[in-house]
Image (cartoon, rainbow, N blue to C red; front, side):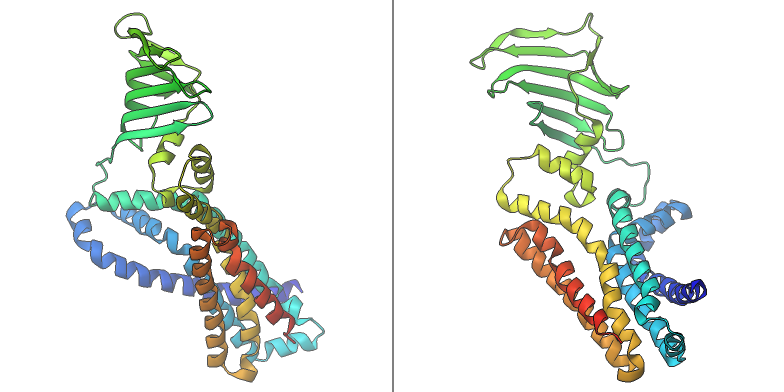
Length: 366
């Protein structure tokens, strides 16, 4: 049985690689036509160019991989059927479901891989690629963010940062921290020209503090917290991290799931429509990679019957099912974002419906 599994995997993985490279090249060629002048002008080096285009392809991986896997599965099963290999294997007493196990296993593994890569690498890599493109491939240019506002409802604090460099978030320029009580009135405001995050602690350079009374009235004048005009004061009570500030100013699609969850937890006052959209995208980040497994459920019955119903009809049937899957996914996005159904239900709707359809088709396979 191991020999048969190795044979089936080899027959599947080779066309899968070809399909994946082919689809990627088509997308890259279209992308390169718009960038070739900038690349020739900036001359950034071929390694950076390769990294740029790999990063550009990242968000498309959740579509490229299922499409490539479906076509590779159809092609593999068509070849096995045409050469009567499936008939010979089944004649030796091996169940058709056991023979299809390597295909399902590849779909499952690729779903996990796309989910992990799509969360841990794709968002920040795509953000980097967009920054490089906006800077016309000049890698020395930095995009600083002016006036970043960060709320920490758990700590009852608000940070106002005059200038933040996403590439060096541990160094802040122009910091103002407002500390409130549990009743909602100001306790004090600390201002500093600069702050640095060192040894898991914030250090404020030449900070001043203004305290407030119970009626939110200032008590006296701002006073220097340290000793001397160039003092550096440790702030152990501030538990905010540089990554939290960057997450607050990044575009939503550039956040990973952990950063999305942190953003939702620290922004409880969002409008219901915006909250539903963000909750949907959080669940969608986890749901969409499972298309790799679901398209295998479509492709196996269609590919295994190519000898009886013809190649074109099998391919069209699988493509129609895949188109229906993504159409229902868009419908789920709309109604989930509008709050017609819970956002998590909208994100998983196409997976649940077409997953059941795929299982029914597999059960009818003889």
